[in-house]
Structure formats: structure tokens, C-alpha cells
Length: 260
Length: 209
Image: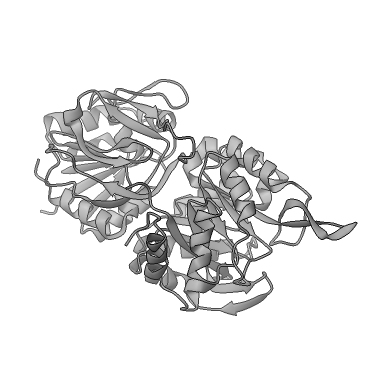
């Protein structure tokens, strides 16, 4: 066989607690991150992702402590994102036990940070995260004019084309891309497949598809139609709709390589 | 007396993940160390490594006496040695990542970029993949068939196929483990490979090559 499609549960963390936002606004508290991580490890998740959605300076120590305690009890790859702006931020998370760091806003305002981290710590530890959303032509609101990136938790559109940005991040040394479709995130209405596919086909590195996974079919379509190498989802697992094993089985049933 | 295990600390990143996994696998005396004297006295040695071949080789060579102490303990003392990821690649004669750099030269071969014929194959090779055991090797009782987590863009090409202890497949065959005598190296990350990885580390702690 070949390398398996990865199923990656994502835990949104705010002030040391797991939450899951619906379109980044209404947050529901769903528990202790370390306990959740341990449960996902036992369930055979292929990787785990923590996204610190507060990403405030004050919460940094709390996040590092969570990462440290998770790395003591979980033996799977751990990606941590949220507020990674410098090589020092990345180093602190990696030393605490993260295997990869996800860089988002900083990679938009200062893409060289991706190259900095790649040079110091290696490409394998950088996940360049791209939040993207349909750009509507203001003169023709019914028309989709492209796909642009969003930063700061999806609040400030800098008007950069998502595919061009993805290609740039790969050239700067990102090891993989986490592509979140903001149009679908948290609504469980499914991935926007055309956009991740445009990115996946344009870069040599793996793409993780994220955003709005409501059913197992959405996960499968993210790979078959979106050409993703991995799928990241939160609510579908977190609130017990489906297990990791069911997700992996759905991928296998569709003829894709998956664990289990 | 309990065994001591030297986990070689040369600034190569994921040291604590490896230490955590070794402890979970039952290791008692894990010394995270760059001290040649500790290495020289260790019962077992683990060399981790993430990042580039060049950065890791330079980091290792920057610590006076460390490589010599490892070589003495492994080649003269016979201590079981496990290299992980770039720690496995460093066993080769040389690597080509960011310019040609000498490795330890303990297992003849070269570390080259993965260049699949099929352009849709993604590099890095990232994720869970097979650990297949094609033939008998010096690590027969250590490397078992299973699935492990890989993360690499370069791969070990040994001069002598007999040094191959396991293979995987990503757009073509890639060496997943090498072994020669009491030296074994795994391209994948046992510390990130859940039950498979912890079981491998448990066997390494008992390994008598």
C-alpha cells in the first residue's frame, strides 16, 4: 500500500479549555485538552491538532503546559497552531512536545517567518495554515471572483489570492498546508472541494483539508474531489457523531488507503 | 542494577517526545545527555533527529568527543544503538541535503532526496505507512511488520541491500529501517507510532544483538 490518508481531529483551545467554534463565534466548552488528546490517541487518530484560538500572550504559558502534558501521554504527531509569529514561538512549542507548528496570520503579514522556521527547525515541522473564503465580485454579488485568504480568526481579509499564497508558502519551506474553507467552517455543510484541489494540485507538499465537515462523505470527498492528503475535523468527532475508526473505515470503503 | 540509556542531546528538537516514549515503553534510566562520559558508560544509546541532515550532522560534530564516545561504546563496547529519523540517516557515509555532508559512516550508503517518478506523489513522505520486512536482517527480532508514522523528504540508500531491515512504499520503495550488528536505524518515528512504536521501543530495551 502507500501512505495512508490521515484523519486528524482538531481541538480548538481557549484559555486551557477545549472549545469548538461555529464560524468562529459561538464557543461551546467541551472539556480538558489533555484528556481529549488521550482519548483520540487511544481511538487511533492519525495525528492530533491543537489550535489556540485565543492566542493571547497571557494564555501562552497555559498552552505550553497543555502541550507538555499531552506529549507525556500521547504517542502520535501533534500539531499546535495559533499565535505562532516568530521562530521563538515555534521553538517553544516544539520543545514543549509539539511535532509541528501551524503558522497562519504571521505567514500572511511576514511570509519569511516560514523560511526562518524551516531553516532553523526543518520544513517537516511547519504547517502553513491558510484560511480562505470565496471572493464575491461587488458589482456582481452572484459571481465568485476568486478565493482569497483570511487572517486573524477570519476577521481581516487582506485580499491575497489563496492559490498564489499557497505556492509561495511551499516555496518558502512549509512542510504541508492546512487549508480551511471559511465558507464551510463549523457549519458542517462540507468542504469546498474546488479550492483545496486547486491548491493541492499546485504544490508539491501535502494538503490537509479542513472546514465544515458534517458527514463521513464530506471527509471522503475532501480526498477524492479535494485531492487532500489528510482531513481535519472537529465537531464530527468531538460531539460523538462519528468515531475515528468510522472515518478511517469510510475512507477505506471509498478505495482510499487508511489505517484500521 | 538498572540499565542506563543515553538519549543523545545535540540540539535536535524532539528529544522529549522520544524520552517520553522510552519511559512509557519501560525505560528506567534515561539520561538526556551530550556528555561523552555518560555516553561511554551507557548500556544503550538512542540518537534522535529531526530537521536537516546537515544541521543534525553539524550539531553532533559540534560537541567535542561525542561522536568518538558513541563510536567507542557501540563498536568496541557493543552497546545496542537505535537511530531515529535523521538519527538513522546519520548512520550513512553522507547526506546531500543542503550540500554534501559526511555522516557517521557506520552503515555504508548515502541519504538522497526522495524523487518519485509520479509528480502527484507528495513530498515530504508524511503519515502512516507500512513497515515491511523483505528478508532476514540483523534486526529480525526488533523490527516487526506493521504501520508506523513517517515524516521525511530524504531517504537512506545503503550500498549493501543486506543492511536493509525494513521497507516502505511511497511512489516506489523506500528504506524504512537499516541494521548492522548492534546498530539499528528506523526512518519512521516510533515515538509517534502509538502501540506499534511503543512495542518496538520495548523490544529495543530488551534487544541483545
